[in-house]
Length: 382
Image (cartoon, rainbow, N blue to C red; front, side, top):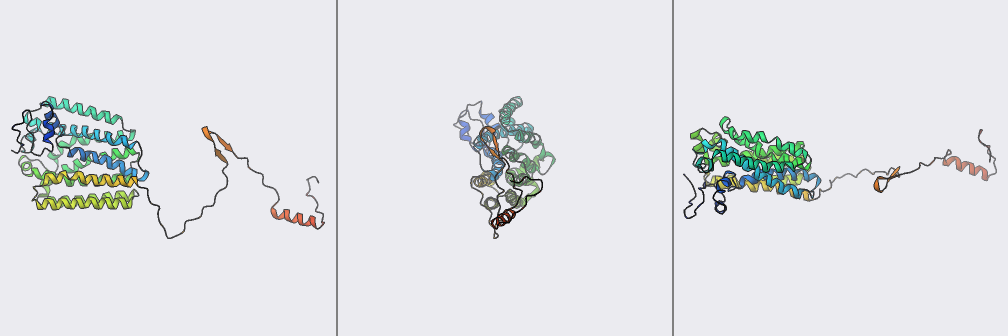
């Protein structure tokens, strides 16, 4: 069984070999270390992959309106929510999968199967994390609150998907990228382009989680756990890249339909180039670099979030055309003029004279020649 050597480091719990930050765990008190691992604080990649879709959804809507000062509040709030809900999701996953985890070399040292945390303690810890998530939820706008609530059934059902379908990675994509809806709803716009973007990020999650599942194919086959890595077999890396290409295409389409053609094209191309690099890296290492390639998807998500944010910061260029624009004739002075404090000034309409300019000129010409013009009937003479 793979594990990190903890000799000479008293008090440090056994840490799985795929732990990203074992050194930070060593600085925590002994009683806190199992809970940090239960929430996957030792592996922050999942936090980023849950957090980035929230930023992407927010920046995607802001491409049309520009950034707002209140966004400086949403960005750290989304991060706090991602930490709390990712930890809660991992805790719930470990509770439901504790028997499976004990049979897999990579997960056998997790707190529940190793006995470092009891089942009751895990449920209490789950409640604490959900309470933090509830506090974050209370700060969201109304539409964003509804969007966030809709994600709870997806989170609750995810641990059971690997037992009933070969596509648990697709369910994870639906769950992990729900932050797109929350971010877009926070910005005040849930539109068809947001749905296209969400679909693209779901394909991206299938791609990177298939790469992650390459580590467990043998153990999963022994205990009967299903995954797309097992389903695709030897073609798993190639099929993963196909999903990455589909994700890039949908990201570009979403940006185009949102009115950002150039930003969408550049962002999608950079995202696709990163996916190509992942394939080359996996093929060159005979899939031994699956974990490090999976972690690099944080940068893939950052490419999308950064591209959309940059597009929101830059002004939208005016459309160019070969034809002259139509000239708009002013409609004349307005009938009402706005004043401070909600007051307004109404203009008095001017009376139009009964005679036209031509009749006036004719009468003046006749009078100049000495011709007397009789007054119209019914009107007194001057």
